[in-house]
Image (tube, rainbow, N blue to C red; front, side, top):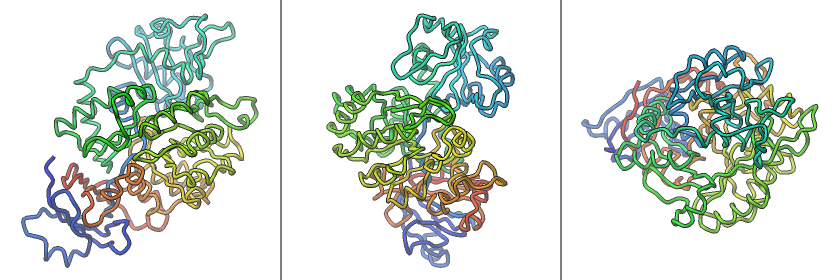
Length: 516
């Protein structure tokens, strides 16, 4: 990548550094030179430097999405899209119109909480291909009989540890797989060719730039890592990628000497990702007490001993633990297991941290654990949380309460579960309502605009141990920045004002990678 020089005039530059806010930013050689007033900088900056006068914009550091499944999102843009499907019959119709990929019909985004009955294998058996459909939360899969046959799943197949094969009254697999049972079919899916994965990821990178995203913390497997590495070697990677490897690769990573914080300017090794529970949408999030009106507490998907051994092995080898925990029981176990663990070059972190018991509210801050949270999930979780967690929802997405304890919150999307568009997350964190006219959900947890911006910029940099280089706009910092066309209403609590805005310019390493 060729670093360029530039001078940008805006309505306001939100540098996030006290005393440096102005209306203009000047960068050179990929680094910020100054933040100040246009009347001063325009006079001093050489005439040959590229200039942008976007006087209706607010400039922020580049947004970093702190939890993505980026290549899955990239490939899924060409798969059957079921998000928002209002009825089961509508979903079936969408799947029937899907194009097969290497002999399978693939899709993502179904949410049976909206339908009059759960989906079954038989709903999809008129399709002449095996079908595999990830749920919206990616913790369940809906498949047809051909897919079950391809995976060798029969009535005699036992549920795997940490997973469940949903069955009918006669014990016959009904076509829905939960948690670790999803892997029974996923492992027989065709792998996308490397050239297809590379092309799709490159296109998705451009879309991320269009939405103001300059970096990601990615959680995927070997094929995704190799794709980013290939892009890096070709000088095509235009996102700052912190890559969290799956726990299945832990022994290999230790054997090869991989450490958190190592890598290149663009692709850095993060930690090792493991799951402790499922999700709210699939009612597999592991809770201390049963879901409202039931005896079901969800499920742990990894037993305590296995998780403890993995965290210890990773930490002793210089690898951060990256632990998925959504229910309050899983959150407590994650905190228990990570307390006192040796430190790596980047902090240990808990992904999602959606529901926390009041007794555990201060523990992450005390241990320096990063809380990687996804505000956009609020937009779909409000009714589910109230229905299934009841009063415990007071501890769900408890942003203000966690910040008051000193916790480090790093915001992201969990794409493809939610849109990678950060405007959705900013709106959700500021307003905590499904739509502009709805009442705020636990309004005491609403955040102001600058606080949300920090959670998308400065906090991810701190989580990746690169805050000395990124996350704020100050002299010497990397020139990763975004100009947003948005009104000053955002500074007075209107998340909708930001949601309705748009990106005018995205700059990475001093290069304009997107311009409206």
